[in-house]
Image (cartoon, rainbow, N blue to C red):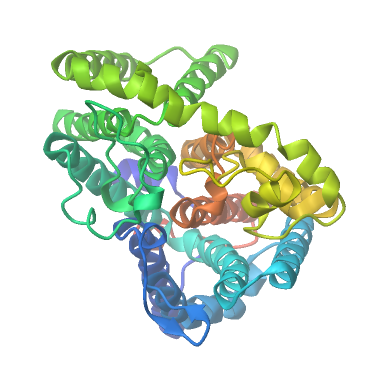
Length: 454
């Protein structure tokens, strides 16, 4: 790991004593939130346990268990964060979203979701922003490990044509139409589109470790892991995720050309292996892939529901243009403003992140949210333009977040808990990286790269 130590020289300030132990507790707590949300499809199952009118799920229990250590570590070390416009926009936007969501909630479960939505984002973002200053490599590894596990099980599911672990508890209403001749893998995420998004979230991290690997054995293993993830992505038949992966690949190559950086031999070999591997997989399962890609059933499942909902968005927005319908109320608001027969297969989701924000948060909320994302995005852009360890470790963070925002054109992905959890964890990691970089540039602290790698 010597090459990582060189890249991360100055990554994090050394901790000692009780603060080091508290840092470990916060790291474990973040791991609980991330692993729990990615290893069990909590948002895709029926949970019968309630506390009064509010549904109690593993997700909610994890939040309660993880909050004390993370919150105390952030408060104790708050001076290590440079507070600014990004915090003003983010906290104001979340306050608006939660208050508006609480006002429009029709039952205790929706009220609980609104409160948990804001709480989760604050905890993940600031927890990762603080913990990542000393444990960035561990957080990278956590996401990579969960990605490999989810991808491996996705291929097992593809071969078996059955989600053996979770198939019996996933809500039937959340399963896509089965069509004829194909099965869409959902793995530990419980839904194919969600799995597809997670695969493109984690792919940049795998490529990062592949490009940094020392020795042929490690390079081969990382290359195999990347191929595994892309095959799992194929098995989801999630066209939005496929297109997003293609857009990112083209953008990445264009960036290298623009920056006058040639393709390394290692990267060329990776591209060749992916092309051959995906082509071989497709040829073996040709009839299945064809049915899941261009068949009439697949087209009906993928395109027509979005057209049905999207054309109703403008009128719905105008019905409550200033403050919106409220968190998680957008789908119901579509049909309140545009009455339609309650048909058996009637679409139930807007499936566009930006249209969902406009409908649910109105003009006020949209402006606040746009300000928060602009602030976060500007930091991401600065990291990939920087040099040294900031750029080396910043580009996979920026690429992963960009993937979600691109894919958001066809899915309300940040309203889905596992994707939201990973996104805000990564946003916090990006904040941690920029904080360390700023302190290094200004010579505020002495750094201990070994603590950052532990």
